[in-house]
Each structure stands twice: as structure tokens, then as C-alpha cells.
Image 1 (cartoon, helix red, strand yellow):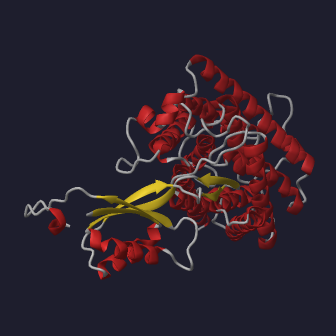
Image 2 (cartoon, one colour):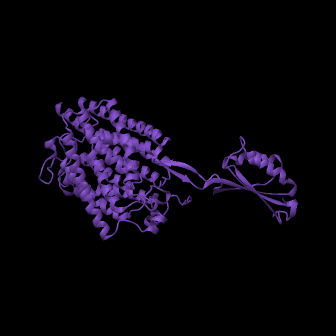
Image 3 (spheres, chains in turn blue, orange):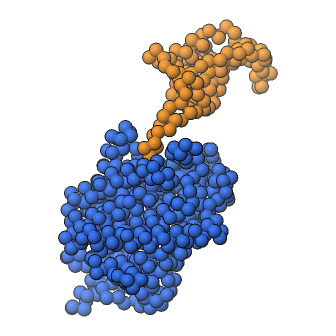
Length: 404
Length: 114
């Protein structure tokens, strides 16, 4: 009888892991649609190619070596047998691999419309094989940071990856964008920011909703169990808080845009939803629904301020706002954990955030720099004007509808 | 014979068409165009930044008519496009003389073909 109950629990937890992993996988569709909606028509096919390509690279490279570096288990998953402690080992790999892909997806939007496709793919190989798995090993993997100190000793806490997944992706994106420079025509000679309009806001909205839905898998699955009353309660609370934070992010971003700009800016509302989700990801397990809404709302405020600040003051061109949504708000998410979780301290969160950021930013910067020196990372000005759809992919996303 | 070319607001196309039918103008060609006049575009907002759309969408209509119809056509287009006393951006009407018109099907030419 006891063995049967264990087997049932094992089956339920494994099943839960797989379904949540599939939800996170669907976030790749969300990123694709969001990014396709926020670029110009002439760069649509290329960003879609980038998204599906990076997803496949992430899945493959994490299988080849990344998972081993992060959690052990041998290269090519050689050490993974079917049987795990409370769920199948393979389901653990499946759930983890879609997170790597998510982190890498963040980079693609920030470098949109001007990067060479295969330089991006080359970076994706390094990021998903080494850069992400190494910082993942220091955090979720429990390893020490280059043998110097261990984040678990400080009590660093990042439930589903505001820092480990989102801020890491943004740090890699920031390093890339700094070496890449802004899109042609983004800043005039006086340095004023010129808006470059996204071509398809219905797609961007669909992408945001898909991400919102996928996030239930991202945070909900990170409870790592379902087959007991306690874990079922925890999962339910995580779902509620994830949803609440996204809602708070939208409302706050929309209100701020209305007050500040005088109009209800849709793209800011979309970024507000994602900011709410990123903000709650580090600790969706401890707040009440109201507090989760407020954490998301603060994320929604931060993201609007940050997007404008990056765009106009720092003149860092990030077409989809990925650095603000995932990086700046990811940091807020980490720092918000101690507000509701008394086991976690601000200093631990700061040390963790710094460790992740410095490693990913510096390592990514070196890789981008090497790529820039060897094969170049930016398309030529003519190719950029013609659109990377034609020059990188040889086709157009909307062949019967061509504008500028 | 006269060629009347009018640049109007896209939203007025239906009422212009209707007004012209009422005075028995039997053919109109409409083209979607972009342009600006004294209105000089308008501002829009994207991600918190204002920008000027310099070329606004307009509709160009072309009508071939007889000399006798001219005043009535101008009056008809004007009243269909000038709403509430009129405002900047309502459009403009150009009139030029038309040397020849031929109806392809029948070979008729001149005012009979208009």
C-alpha cells in the first residue's frame, strides 16, 4: 500500500513537472510574437528565425553540457537514469532546459533589427552551454562561486529565477547592446531619441498573453511538487500571486503612462504585465495576493521609468524593453523577497544579484567582443536599411505588404 | 471638359461619393495617397516619446466632367467635406481642362464619353 502511494505521488509529481515544463516551453512562442510585433515588418522573419533557432540551440547545448555543469548528471545526460527521488530525472532535465531557452530569448529582443543572425547563434551556444549553467550552478545547483564563497551560506533566495533567469538574460543583452550600438536612425545628431514603431501591436499583445500564461508553468512548476496537500496549497498560492502581480504591473504601467504621457500607451501596458511577472518570480510563495499585486505594480512603475531612462538618458537602444523588463525589474524582484520572507535578507539578495550580474555581464561582454573582432556582430548599414529579413533570411515575412 | 482632382480626408470619401451620385456624376476614381498641406502632419505617441507623422493619409479623387457640371461638382465636394464650418486638413480641389475623353467600349469621344 505504502509503495503504491509512493508510486502515485511519483507519477503525479513527474506529470506535473512535464506539464509545467510544456507551459514554459510555450513562452518561446510568447517571446517570438512579442518581438515580432515590436520590430518593423522588414525585420520580422529574421527575429522569428532567431527565436526558433535559439530555442533549439538552448535545448541541444544544455543537453550536451549545460545541465551537467549546473546540476551534475554527466555530459549528454549520460549519468541520468529514469528513476529519481520523488520524480523522474528526465522530467527534471525537461523542466530545466526550457528555463535556459527563456533566458536566451530575452537577449534576442534587445539586439533586434541589426545583429548578424549567426553571430547571435554563436553567442547562444556559449550562453546556454557555460554562462547560464555556471551561475545556475552557484544558485539552484548549490555550488560555490569559483571556490570563493557560497551563495547558499548567505541565504540567497530566488524561487523561480527573477535573477537567475531573467536578470541573467538581461545582463547578457546589455553587454551585447553596448557593443552593438543603436539601430540606424534611432538617435538624431543631437542625440534625441526617435521612436521606431513596432509593426504589429496585436501580435505583441498576443505574445504578452502567451508569456503570462506560460509564467504559471514557470513559477507554478518551480514548487517542484504537486502530490501532497502542502505542495498543492503552495502551487495554488503561487498561481494566484503570479496572476496578481501581472495584473498589478499592467494597472500601474497604464496609469503612469496616462499621467505622464497623457495617453494609455499599449506597449507600456504590455511591458507592465511582464514586469509584474518578473517582479514576483523571485518570491511568489510568501506574499498575500494583495502584496503580490503591489510587488507587481512597483515593477510596472519601474519598467516605465527604466525604459524611458535607458532610451533617452543612456541612449541604449532596446527595441522591446528587455533590459528594463527582465534586468531592472528582475533586480527589484530579488530585493522584494525579504519584504515577505523573513528567512531572507537584503544583503543576501544584493550579493546574489551582484554575483549573477557581474559574471553574466563580464563573461557575455567578452564573448560578444570576441565575436565582434572575429566575425562581426552587426550587419552593414545597407543591409540594415534593406531589412535583415532579406539580407539574413532571403525572404520577407509579409511579401504582399511592403512598407518603408 | 474638365478634370476635377480633389484631395480629401479618407473618412469623407463615402459622403463625397454619395453627394456626387446625387448630381449624376457617374464615374469617380479614388486613390489612397499621403501628403501634407497647412495641417503639417500630427503628433503621435510611442513608448512615451512623441513623434510627428509628416505625411498623413489622404484620398485623391479624380472626376472627368463636362464644363456645365463644374460648379455643381465643386459645390457638392465642398459641402460633403466641410463639416462644422470646416477646419485645416479638409482638403483641396484642383480643376484643369481636359482635352479628350474616349470610352473604350463604344469609341465615343468628347462630352458624350464623360
